[in-house]
Length: 283
Image (cartoon, rainbow, N blue to C red):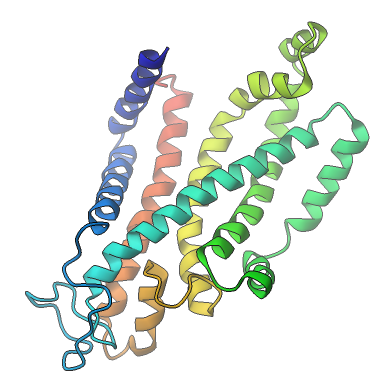
């Protein structure tokens, strides 16, 4: 069984690699993970090292991407920030997926009262902006990675539930689910065994979009002061510290902006490529 599961993973990767969008996504994500791992052991300059004589320095051998307003090495902070953003993206996918599936399960429940109540709650809460959720979480917990993950997970989990509900409803009312329930299977077993596989294409696309959007959310929330804490390396931190002088030193904004763009596009394309591969039966 273990070897069969590994074989399916490699088959999925081969199917994605055959597509241009999938190949791009896999390359970017592979580099992202590799840089995050390398940054655990090495960065061009120590993160806390600053050079007051070379603030906003142009790219050079000592500082390949230049320095920011404190004289810190931009490349080192981007490399270390890749870890933070990778953690945020992964945790957001896990938490929003779990919340979304829980809500979908309640929305297609056999209990009409429970299902209608869950639908009403989701419709009421889904209009709350992610920024407002983050602000509410910041009051008791302070600015942190947890606040970003919590705000994104709630917002994206609600959105996932609303989008996946129609497909889940069709699967939940299908003959094979009815047969499973008639055979004594529990409602949650039928949901996880029969309904979830049928909404997997929707889940895949939405979760990859959620991962990409969480990277953008981190940058925006950190700029507003409700994202990662002070001194924590992240791509949003690099953007927020350099955007004030974008007209004078544009390169310090270009580098983190380019990294964020590449990562977000890769995550979005990964979901599309995975969905296309599933539609064509390659997975």
